[in-house]
Length: 571
Image 1 (spheres, rainbow, N blue to C red):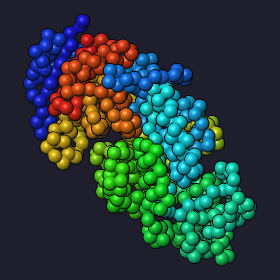
Image 2: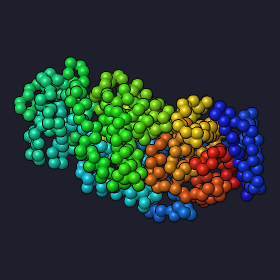
Image 3: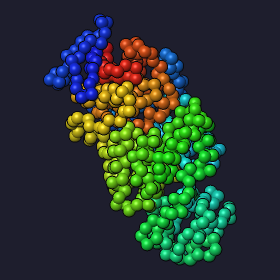
Image 4: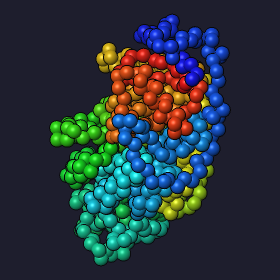
């Protein structure tokens, strides 16, 4: 058996490396000299690492879940990709897909998972609890039967003003320029008059004025108020577009957003609380809270979950889509477990030319604070109707990947679009291309991230992960291994955006699914002990038997249990 080399670096707050010392007296471990001047002399990574190719279509076989007391669980799609194309081929940017009529059946869910879906999002603006429960069960069954780790995110409706449903079986309507539409607070029922839209807010007809501009779904269509008749508001379409059920409505007057009434509405409505109870009972992994205006609502929700569902493991995502949230960004992101840049509704509340800078600010702030961030809304909007995206949309996706957001999200493209798999394929392929470009052009330099730890122990973990990522880049390691019980050290490594993929080993199936949202993480379910040498030997044996790693691969290892970094060549 080939010798296995291991190295531990002790750390100081100045982030300098001290002289390496021997990990173990075992003859299996031999000391290596790897000071800065010797890095270039280390063996180069094998040729397995250099190819980035498109993921071929896979037909997943039936899968019997591993007994994690003796085996290891890894996403079957990622495993196939690793075997075929190598470490460097793995996509680091994750993909969230909204599930709707176009993708809710078991066959389509499997096709989307195979094509790269990491998180399935259910939007509580649409459907009822029975429908959402069926989708959640299908995703969980798919995970169990096919060896996948697709997480489920539930998105609350929020208390902002919305359109109602469009009538039985109607998924969209087209508003043409010059047409007169009626927006009414009356319940229309199944016999909805032609060109009539119900509105969720009872005071709508009282608040609007003649000449006000009504913006639908972040600018998908625009109307001008031309007449008020009791509970009905007659509006003329000025910008034609697609009207979708439960779309958000914003009101502008004399070039300014009318927000006084929305500011009086609760962020989490009574319906949202019922939906939250439903989602937690069904075991969703993430709850995305709509129209967050301050950190207080995040604290309120987390306190509610901890007191009523103390044994439930669910993360709270703050959706940044309200102008009020922009003055409280740092407090909101610190309070939440992650954030979503919901550009559609946000773009209806701030000037359009400010949206890109807000997106960049939120993405960078989330990385600094070690919180996953999702860039959402209108990434590939044209693919709702057309099989190919516009070049501008591809550039938009590329910019989000270049900013190194943790995840990209499809909304209408996957929920009710005609080409959900093609839209997903575009996100996957553009992500792979831009990530490869970034790796080829970036020298990785010194990792310069602000300290976020609040305790001595957390500070040490943070320093270890920063140094491990830097070391992996300089040594051109094939992978980073992290053994983590709750996922914190895996998250810290992801924050550093290293060149190589991060294999995150956790005994928790829920933690494994949550980690599937974060940049660069490949989560494995594995029970491990406090004996790191035993853990490593067992992990190497299991991964080699599945063809995921090979003898000679260079691995940098960290763990929750020991404040150390190990550099190991696979025996």
